[in-house]
Image 1 (cartoon, rainbow, N blue to C red):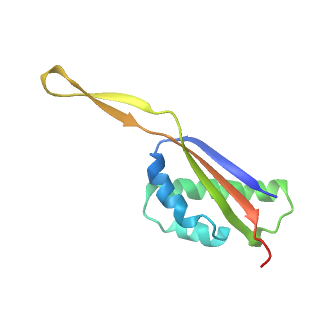
Image 2: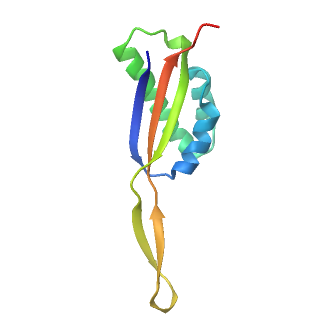
Image 3: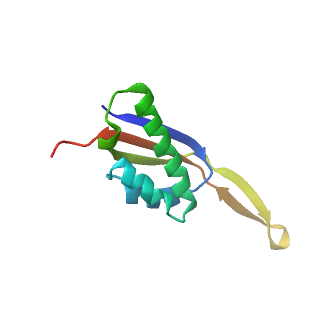
Length: 113
């Protein structure tokens, strides 16, 4: 049985979050959370909170063994982009795109090997 948690409209570029998510995908939850805790990236803290939320969902909704959980998948989708403008030379405008992300973490029990 899969359990998931989502964080929407996070103010960080999806490409930055994907780099962090790729590192912990497929790892046991405890090992993944330890890795995220000590990564210097801003995205690591955001992903850590979503994994923590998914873990809380497991404890609240199911009777799955928390020690055998694996981060099965982390999906990072692009949210709406905030468009801002910066004045440039000779009356022109420079466009600034402030990107947002939707982060989805899927936890599942490890397959018996």
